[in-house]
Length: 204
View (tube, rainbow, N blue to C red):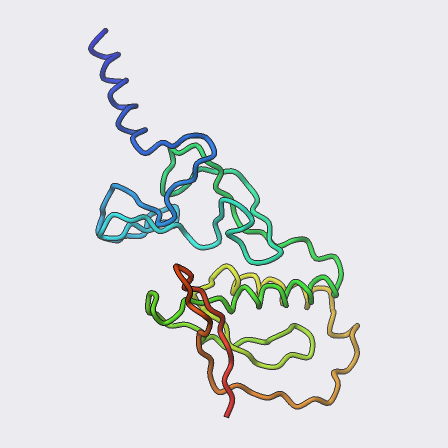
């Protein structure tokens, strides 16, 4: 019996090696100890060959991890650290009850969707996804497709816009010719550790 008891204690000690104090979040890089060749797990997370765990898009620890105006709802286990004892939720758009709410929410999400990493940071396709700059009487603009939660949110708001028949209620758009961008680039000022920029459209 003592041997069985010590075996249970040993297993718990190993599983809780990465456990943190209440309120202390896991590392921002999603560090994990297990390696499996970069395969995507059933819960959506991905373990890279170097052992770092990448959480599935759309998850959050707080509203700060979500697009502007979104809420972090739910309290599940962190996919990259199930034993950490923190709440891991999902970014959820605020309930849009009117067409004005939907239009404003779309503008706020567009701002979040334009966020990008400056050239001296990690490389990758940025500012390449063309979308509507607003939901009513739109013109084209470019956003960063890496902001997957924002891209999903824009699609959801468009669905809500159609469901509420907002186009039929707003009347005709004014006769304005759109200045169509030919591309976009991540621009901003890199100071200290700040590598964040914004997708800015370019025109001929």
